[in-house]
Length: 263
Image 1 (cartoon, rainbow, N blue to C red):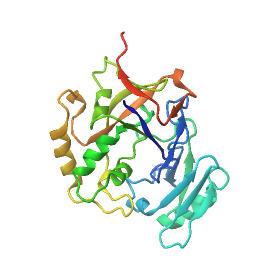
Image 2 (image 1 turned 60 degrees about the vertical axis):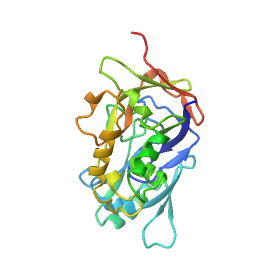
Image 3 (image 1 turned 45 degrees about the vertical axis):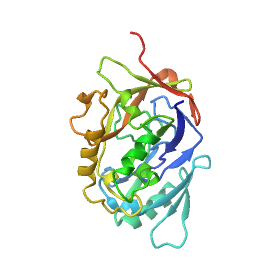
Image 4 (image 1 turned 90 degrees about the vertical axis):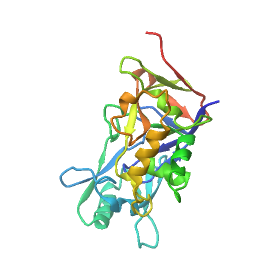
């Protein structure tokens, strides 16, 4: 039986995740506390893994109930703890010292800062997919691949690339039912430079993207709608949620299935 195996939230975009037992759906379709904050420079540009590989050196632990971050800066003996609402300026000053230029924390509690604002729902992947993709790269564990891909929802009890069923032709809607919550599959997520790097050191894995593209194309299930693949550097699925799902709660262990409604 397919089931919800993991829920991963990223309270500050590009920093480490926190694994939770349940997550609430916001009116936008995003998960509460996911990418709620982003680090930006003086011009308002995102400071993230795509633009600044140094961010991989930061370690963070979040308490989403107490609204705190424990931030470990390289070469500092102990982590520093900040309240995400009450100590944003102090946190921004610490991050500015680390990066070597002025940054601030930007907040969006309604939708967060998803890569695709048109599909702000949780990104979906299966544990089997992460296991398969990790096997393409000697020395990369499943846990490390999970940190490279940074999806929100992980599905257990299914084969690799099961989630590729979630997108179809534009006029054929495919839904993922998680407990009593319905997520609309949109498209396979286009990957960036981040998965190519070690999530702890930022060091690039040699020929990562080339290996990934070759293997993804070779292992793409025959039933997949290939019109979504103008290239094969895509993994996990973007989703949207209807307004009717607002305030509902995803829970670890929820039964999961896929269906196409009769229109």
